[in-house]
Length: 184
Image (cartoon, rainbow, N blue to C red):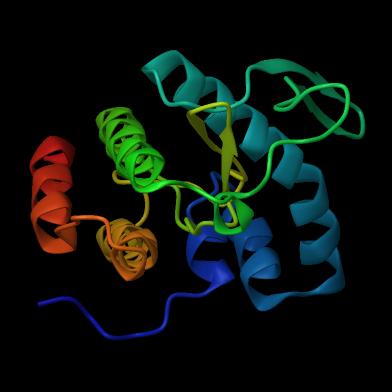
């Protein structure tokens, strides 16, 4: 049985590798904590994006880390950016393909020891038959975040519900159980 406690942004920030004083400032939302989080956020996303890419997760290719954030591959073409999955108009076959691609990315992410921790159809892009996972700075590790399993279930349930409402054959609990087995 999963804990029903609401998981907040502090839950993933708490897993950042910080000194105790710095972690407390970030979690408590002090001015210093906000400044520190603003500096750490791009580094966290870069590290997670590289790890996800290396694990075979369908994410934008991480090009470089800059002073102001990240440079990653653009998903789209010269006339438009890829739409978020929640805004894409998918046929039934494309919907089934998107689900299968998402499951493969979740398996790869789990095998890498990571949980997205904020997965929704607004953190997924759809471009020319390819599903792309984005927005990874809040991702957590199974080994350092006690809420990782709850966050994984929330991620799977959140996207699974969206796919189910559109007619896809999705078994959230079965996928969650499979991912748990990979995580252990």
